[in-house]
Image (cartoon, rainbow, N blue to C red; front, top):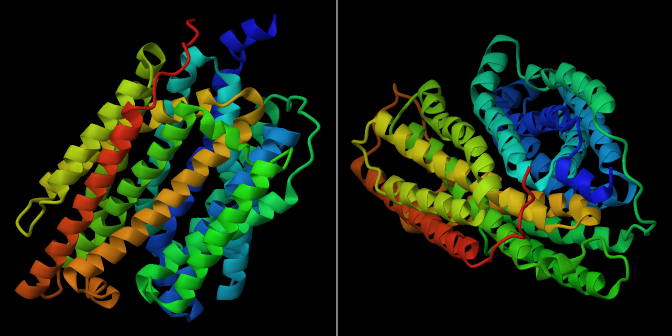
Length: 484
């Protein structure tokens, strides 16, 4: 079979390959969403204050966000399969060591090891799928992979609560170990051997500058909501990140074998779809960050009720993502990405009008609408990003996709927290005040201040989603897809 015909037909074991990638696609979002439920129990068990325990979650996000480009480029150089298998092994080992930790410092250290493995899985997974599937099935495959991601997000909070309450917080890490072992065995048998790569040197200075840039930016966005964005440490971190980013771009433009080939961004579809990913995650995490505070602190819902309401978002995404992915293989991704953004904008404008009298059913319905728009957008847009990258750049393209997600997450939380505090006049300590149905109802002045902050934050998220809609609309059409 010629190379052209092989590319059209795809790998004969491509659906089995998708199941191997699904292990990483399930474990990484599950781990990200399961951890927050267990933080209070960790704080009590390890005798550490909640601010210190937050580093169990923050360290993971920082390490993943700063390393995904490196792993994507290494995947292009030494093979996506190798990076994926090492990532699965490190993630599983880190999970085991996290569960065995009896001191906060050790727990954070092993979370960093776990994050290194998670970054490997996130960066090369889309590239493995793109290499295995023909263009005529790529949207469907990425849509099904999106279902697995949404399943991980949906399972995290209830599973975390069940394991923490019945067995203890270490089990939120131990649960990854058998899944990871099965994933390593299955992936080693199913994933095709890494293709011969171009003999290019790895850009170590470029990788270091990228790490400095994104570590500075992500750290500033993580610390800004609590410390204040104008405080000297946060300003210094922003300056470090900006300086590192400037030096990184200069390096990549001048070096013959750059870690990140900036020529990728000359491709209109790749550049616009990557930017739309950033804006989509920014709007998404504005919702997921602030909504639990609205439900528990303002509306006095129990954690169990909050979990049920919030599950509407990933469940609806699970339903729409595979349908959107399959449809994008037939009609292209641009119309679906624009339509998905439009649905998300409508949902955000509805959510921005929430008050004290809205029923949980209505709130869940609006979150479901937002999830439907997200599912409609994500799979086609991911297909556009990965389909626009040449074969020898699919690893770094997956790294760019993961980087945009993590920047969007950090920006969404940071901007939402800053705008909420400015519009409401409420501090972070007031947000966490006595949640639960049994607590006294908040005062009318607190209610009014909170709702002002919520309305402003979600209106901003809707405005940013409008920019994402425009970006998706003007990016042009993809190259014609091969038909089965």
